[in-house]
Amino acid sequence: SKDHWEVDPQELTLGEELGSGQFGLVLEGMWREKKVAVKMTREECMSDDEFKEEALVMTKLSHSKLVQLYGVCTQHSPMCLVFEFMENGCLSDYLRARKGQLSQDVMLGMCLDVSEGMAYLESSNFIHRDLAARNCLVSHDHEVKVSDFGMTRFVLDDQYTSSQCSKFPVKWSAPEVIRYSKFSSKSDVWSFGVLMWEVYSEGRLPYENRSNAEVVESLNAGLRLLKPRLAPDAVHLLMEWCWKEVQGTGIVNIRTTAQS
Ligand code: ADP
Image 1 (cartoon, rainbow, N blue to C red):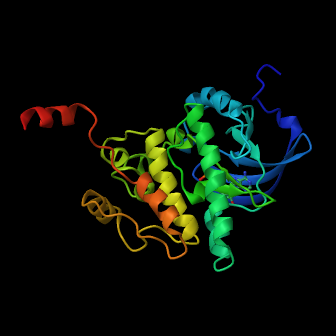
Image 2 (image 1 turned 180 degrees about the vertical axis):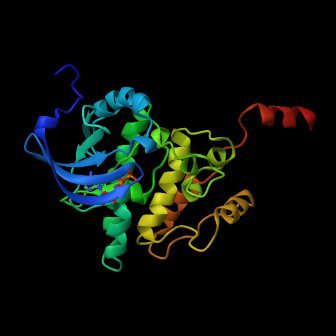
Image 3 (image 1 turned 90 degrees about the vertical axis):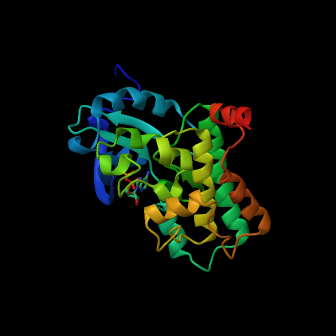
């Protein structure tokens, strides 16, 4: 085949439905004797052409704590994405289903898994942009892996991609992302702090009863998520470091210094 990331539809067998997501249905499948998860994209939900180029980059990202993208089947219309199969589903559901059963050591291990995957992404100069427990998956041996990295760039639904809109993940986003869509490895670190909070809160939703607007307001006032009951002080300190606003850098600050 011409491109190593192109999946031959002849080699792909589709099975039962696993769920549905941003881009459409997710099906169980088999590919080259491996169990896989196949994301069927709906044309109206995804910008195809840009994605095909980026898929090449994403298939080259390879790490034990990332959900591997094996390839893309572009001959299939609409195209589909072929991923490593993760037996234990998404991390947020996994946490909720095991409420009261997970030890602090296990929780720390989950955070460590995610941090390793994210450190690899940063070293590859790749920004996740949507890190959250719902975008991590759990393997057959209970290892947590980071999934859906970089994918929000191809979502056509502007309800999801504009910080003013209802589906934008404000509760996981750094202030500079909310204010001017400035994504970076640093804004991924902010989201990682919220993910740690989700793990130690056994899958609760952050700022459960608050609207996005209320969350923005309290962040601006310097307020942060509270320490989950199960989180040791040292872990809570790490969360707080993730949620520090970077100050003392940049042109704005030089000006204010010059004026005073
Ligand atoms: P999207 O990223 O398009 O919103 P999701 O990643 O949330 O879609 O997928 C929807 C559901 O499909 C998940 O909640 C999960 O249950 C299942 N799923 C997705 N990817 C995999 C995978 N690699 N292995 C097993 N199940 C998966």
